[in-house]
Every structure is written in structure tokens, then in C-alpha cells.
Image (cartoon, rainbow, N blue to C red; front, side):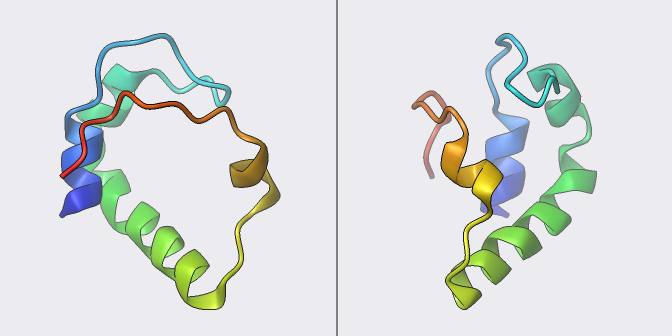
Length: 65
């Protein structure tokens, strides 16, 4: 539920490094939430973080819940 809320509340900003615009992620939040949650949970449980996540440009701006 938290991943869905975060996607659903993204601010309209420029596309990130992946080129996916925020409006698209908001529009498809119900579809993307479950697979993203599974990826996050698997990463945490196995203690493995993908190289792309480690080198991405992360910044505050997403509402926390």
C-alpha cells in the first residue's frame, strides 16, 4: 500500500534517469505497485541492492508515509 501511495502522489517533474515521466507512474500506480513492492522486499530480505539502485541519482521529494 505504501508503494502505491508513493507512486500515486508523485509530483509532476521531469523524467528521471530511466526516462519514465511521473504522470505515467501515477497513471499506472495500481499496476506497478505490486511488482515494485516485491522487488523492494526481495532486495531487503536477501540483502542485495542492484547496481542501478546504488548508482541512481536519489533525492528527496516523495512524500513519506
